[in-house]
Every structure is written in C-alpha cells, then in structure tokens.
Amino acid sequence: MELLVLITLVISFHTVRIFHSGLVKGYISPAITSPSVIAIKGNDSVIVKSNNGHFGLELQPGDWKLIFAVNEYNTAPFEKRVQVMKGQRIDLGEIRLSQ
Image (cartoon, rainbow, N blue to C red; front, side, top):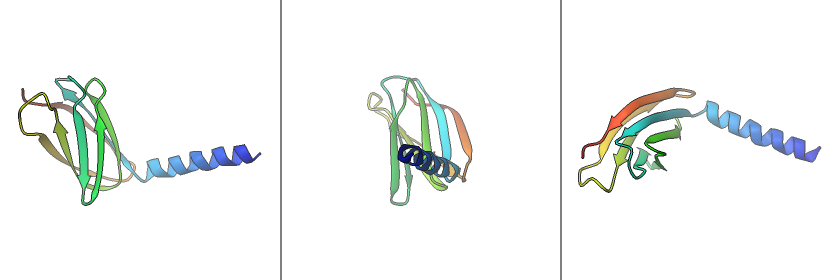
C-alpha cells in the first residue's frame, strides 16, 4: 500500500512539473558529434547534448536564450531567443550551423 502511495506521489509530481513547464525541441544540422544546446534565462541555465541532431529541453515559462555550439566548427555559436509559456510545445525545426 505504501508503495502505491509513493508511486502516485511521484507520478503526480512529474505531471504537475510537465504542465508548469514548456518543451522546446528541434533538429541541429549537420548532426555530427552531438552538439550542445544551452538555454539561459537570468541565473537559470539548462544544457543538453543532441542525439543525432535531435534535442529537447523542458523549460520553465519565460524568455530564454538558446545557444547552439559545436566544438568542431571554429565559428561563433548560433543563438536563438524563444518565449516559453506554460504547457507549450515549441518545435524550432531545423537549426543549420555554419561549417
């Protein structure tokens, strides 16, 4: 019985968290060596590595600056600003990085 209550609490916590955040996803091209995606809002930051170019970030509502960086290219990182709203799913599509 205690395990069932614990499982219910964990599921409830994650459900509330999902509904209070938004998802930003996309595809980085060319998809080599897992480029990093960094999201910055004030003092908050989130970093993920892409998986074959695909990435997804669960972010709290607000204005975020996304930075796409690949070490293999000796170029400045690409930046994009997004406004995330509660429960919103944003698909950025293809992000092309210079070679």
